[in-house]
Image (cartoon, rainbow, N blue to C red; front, side, top):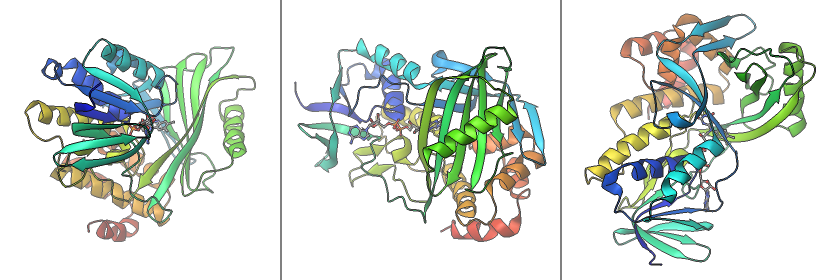
Length: 383
Ligand SMILES: Cc1cc2nc3c(=O)[nH]c(=O)nc-3n(C[C@H](O)[C@H](O)[C@H](O)COP(=O)(O)OP(=O)(O)OC[C@H]3O[C@@H](n4cnc5c(N)ncnc54)[C@H](O)[C@@H]3O)c2cc1C
């Protein structure tokens, strides 16, 4: 096998495979020699991705469940709302991996390699990926490993950490049309703390205990909180855990660069490229939007190293300001999200959090949060 390729996809998780899927589907890339490298085979159901979008996305065929009604709870205020144009969607990791890998397996120009990547660098106008045993070069390296992550510290980042249980009960008690986006009726002693409750059938739901805080908890604490919520809030005494998911997502003020190296041959995707939203941890939807634009650029023979637009910078600033407020404990996440959902149409809050809001919606959002808590953070994050 020659070790030279057109494109090398370094890391075949969400972002790497989302790119691969687009390249496989587009006949313009049919002749491109593509290498996909990962340290592991993607066969496990290691992620459940949830996100909201309007209409149908590229991964609609593997949407496991979607909801048009969402609920939001705090001790003082609750809202149950029917979405107009957005749908909240769930995709299971193993469905996603299988869908992309099955589609790519038929393409003779795609090579898969399992190996631990130790270094990615530029040599002349080629990118080079070095694993424990081999070295490969390509016109572009699409990287989603953590090799170029900035330093994540407790000063610049919070962790979004969660334990989720998919539970099954004997009696049909869930409403699979309505999902709980955030239930904040929980103790906030560790920081911003809430439950997701996502029913997929009348007898099954994913319940996820989620926190934004500097450090992860002992495992027993997540489990205790989940049991308490299921017993007291959902009033379920007997249930079976059919799947479990633990995750840590960095919510960071550190700068994740979109490309590395002077020649911009190394393009960072996914979390590595800064596509995890700093203020919420949501990533799936932002990865898809970035890759749509990246593939258009590649198709036009232009560089896939996309500069940030004015819109990107504006939403970065909103995110960084919100995260700065949370990091400096000026006001809790529960209070912020409660103010937003109380004062604005929920669809406007979702549009804002999806980086799709109008100027009027942003004006209303800026005026619905306490100015004193936000002004210093906003100023600091301008520079
Ligand atoms: C459990 C969990 C649930 C999540 N749920 C949501 C959600 O509901 N909605 C949402 O928007 N976001 C969610 N996220 C956040 C985000 O969408 C995921 O983390 C997503 O997988 C990020 O995509 P990625 O491609 O950047 O990284 P990954 O999907 O982690 O892919 C990186 C790939 O690189 C490989 N790799 C890394 N280092 C090396 C190396 N040195 N050598 C070889 N291979 C390497 C890994 O094996 C992996 O396959 C979740 C995250 C987790 C952990």
